[in-house]
Image 1 (spheres, helix red, strand yellow):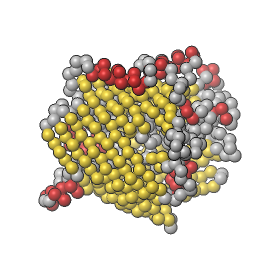
Image 2: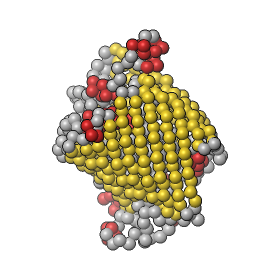
Image 3: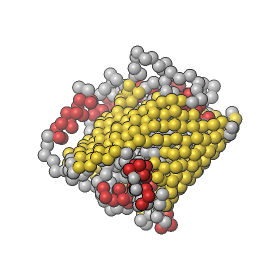
Image 4: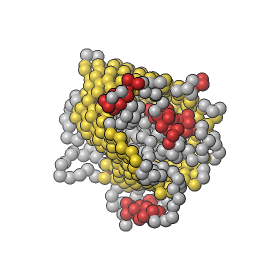
Length: 532
């Protein structure tokens, strides 16, 4: 029996059981803009149902709906912004709003138009998006959202190089059959259905992204890659929350596009157990198994976390990733958080200090300072990420931890260290964001696999011993981004934006400097990562 059928049968069994629903089902978008406004209230609410490492959140679960909307829409409109239908649609309302006690529907046009300069080279982005979302039922037990973006873009040189090499616009859409281009035309869509039949259970089916962790990055599951189809069940009982998700990904590394033959698929099952040990301390356990069609082992569907590593002793063909998360909140402002990802290891080699290739793990340590210095709207964050060579890689791309040539975890792949600091300040309609970062990583050279590209087989590794972070062509990356945003309409995050990015990549092969200034108008709640 296919895993999708088993999951559907499980859902049916849950639906026909008696329920007493209290929770809502509306999904809070995966958005750093939103996180900056709601994180203080989520982390320090004292609500044992707040499991901050499982995202996206759900309205009414992470925060009650009244509090959420008051944080998201903190701006009181001026009289002139409401004096006509056109003024209201631009400044205070959704493009379409329909509300009844048992049904709500909104729709928005989501433009993003910007121009920029990289030296003497002109850059531009022209995005036309549209989103429809709604909730059904007096208790809002069912919600849905769907969106579509059509884009024309001329990126900075380093992003253009990435797109041409990987045939994908970062986190947005695949661009197969392109030759070497300097500008791109692409579209992508997504959406999710969410149902909360009881206060203990939420069921989602979607084509979108998910995130595990408290940090800006995740070494377990991030929103770095392109959308993918998934079915997710999340159960909550007191201080414990358990998530099980089945997802399908695309394996297209090194494959020439063919309109008549679809790209090969691969499958992933994800388990995450979160425990709020007390009002300040949280622990989490994570497990993933990737497998290619035809290699299904029914033990993959075992809901008991960490069951698969035992099954591998019996010859299970899938590739597993396990991990641990933790966070500690203190002094009503600080959140200390971390992750540990373990892709593979040999016990006797862990402490031997020999640089054994199969000791594949990653670590994250971070600190958030929310409402820093008692200034409302000011959030500061520092984060360190480190991943050893060959982590997330497999013998073949059908079982590695990637989707459409992008990592499902950190955008760098593996074989790197990264330190970054982020500051956000929201005051009335202004949002100011500063990010600085330094990374050290090792690039491949002369066709030798030093462990950064997770799409390469670890069978072709450079060496069995003596592996270390930064091996290969040692590269230093310095990154700075400054952004000022003026909010026009809080309902769709429409506003004016001015940005400056400076990037310097240095190795023995040469130095690449990037300096980009952009200005434009943007809307929507979504994360796009160009800091690589």
